Image (cartoon, rainbow, N blue to C red; front, side, top):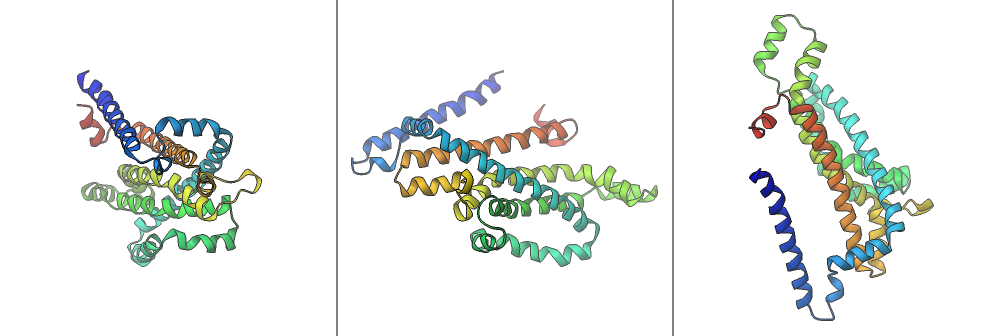
Length: 263
């Protein structure tokens, strides 16, 4: 009971101290620079004043993040399964996956605008590209990391390849998959925000949080800009919380990481 109480109190106390330091820094700034650092109550007021606009932007960014995230899960799972079944395919494709990961996403933005158009399609593709790599790498590693003794046992009992995958390799890969999923869940709202910022469009109220950040910055509405950042953080927490809940539901009955934490 004491440990659970500390788990609640310590973050609250730390957050209160950080806010106090925040107000202290603002107080010490000269009058000419105070506008550059809005304090929490000003950000909250800006969030309330701009809620209709921010609400639409949240919906648009969430839509792009969800579609890109879902596509990344589907494509990376299929590709990871293919890579795990054939070492030759894995050796052939892996360097190009690395090249794709190391290419700055911002380079793709002008190309994507030409290929698929500005707005939601470009946001989805950028989110997909950002989320794809950690998912495919972690899932592939999980599929090829099944216990060798168990693999040989399946082979000794003449299990089919599908039985080996379904009954052994997929369960063994779940912890790796959820690790990649947690990373991708953090990156999905960021990817959608980057997509909005670099390739977003306000046509048909389609502007997302990144697009709104550009508008507020150009208008010098700094409390609203900080409010946009705060809303994006909340969106990221929602994504990660859903993934953590799903991971717990799938793994807590049998995986060591959850079994040990419960003791």
